[in-house]
Image 1 (tube, rainbow, N blue to C red):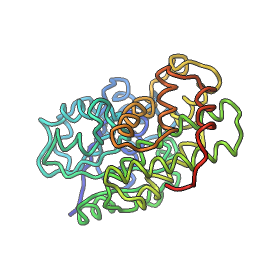
Image 2 (cartoon, rainbow, N blue to C red):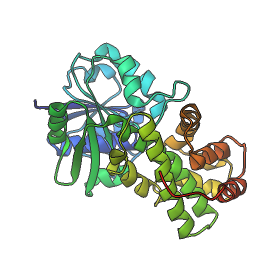
Image 3 (tube, rainbow, N blue to C red):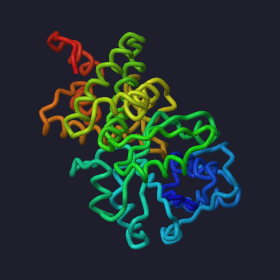
Image 4 (cartoon, rainbow, N blue to C red):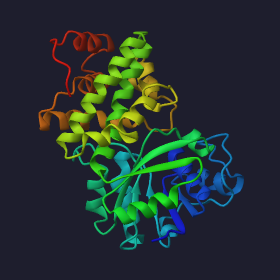
Length: 332
């Protein structure tokens, strides 16, 4: 099984970076974007100035605004924001060929349905073999060719091996897994936890508090992953712990920067003003909170983040509530 052409759906920073990954791996790439200025900029100037300014793109990447231009591709990477995956793939469905694999690169839980991205894809494109790409990766670094390792999860071992070979290059290293649920949960929950770490940073609570949030947040991530049918060892890999460490450690993360602003006293509206890129944790937090309630899982940090985002509490009150919880034995 070999791939020669790739279609990337979503012209944001991550979609553009993955188009660059595909081009470096030797694939002929078509990048679909909703924004006319992105299409024009990629084709004429080889730059996505709106979402990835200052990064020179491979001149071989062709951008389009028309989903139909992806119909002939033998591999699709789906990179819309998680809350728009359903509508985006529904729009692509008339052009999808049965059997063409879709690599899901969005990280989140769909609000309302509480569906993971693989569930959404199965409902919209049931004949599309699915894979999940997730791991510690900042778009600008990946696009510039800095070393990156990620998890590529696929239930079909042969397909997973073929995808891994198709996307890999000297600077982009996928590690193969077969646990799609674990990979998805890691990518979704880490965005919520990054907001918590940003709040801690904004309130100048120190490195000890930061480390505690990452560690106890990882426990919450693992609980949810296992409860949904994933494996703890998957969540302990690049797609969970690895992504958590990265996203919670740098204001390059859109989610951490949102939390940083909230910790410094800004409202959600103020923190998001003028931002074009999506902080996925903002949308996933209520869905993660609902899943925790539905599955009867203790996820106090994620719940505190959602309560803060929807105005049920203040940052100071959320921290006080977490610190006043009953003392307990440390376990997952």
